[in-house]
Length: 207
Picture (cartoon, rainbow, N blue to C red):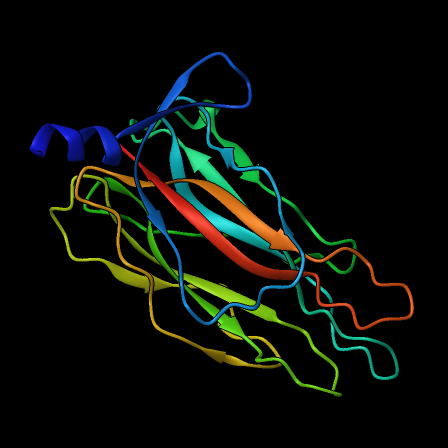
């Protein structure tokens, strides 16, 4: 039974580049997301790199128009060995509204680079006849890769969006692993309908 569980947990996935393999150890999700739209393709950091931070694509409040709030999330990826030349990004489906607001990065404490290991999503519940925005903001926890130090919360200022509430934190990547991939659920433009853009997200931990 133990060997079967090992195989299930450590799934070997081929990255979209087709040039290397990624060992996914865990999938992170939350329970307060909405279900409009379709899931995009999972995207991963480069070989032996993990997410050190993130960026968000957010539409500002539309005083007369339709609000969509969070449209996209981008992972900022880096090697744990200080090879800044191997820095890259990973993102999945992204809505068409708003702009990227700027990177938020984990600390480099005690000479160790820290990585994203857990997340929390701010999401607005379905409004019925009101203007739905769905996901509004996301924040993370960071930790050193081996887990020798406690994790801590990190987010981009101001730490919250216009609408909705944060739910419970996702589970956390195992020690020796960190977030390395992302998959988002995004609703396409609805024409005259109510647009919501990004509704849900899952992250992948890699060893």
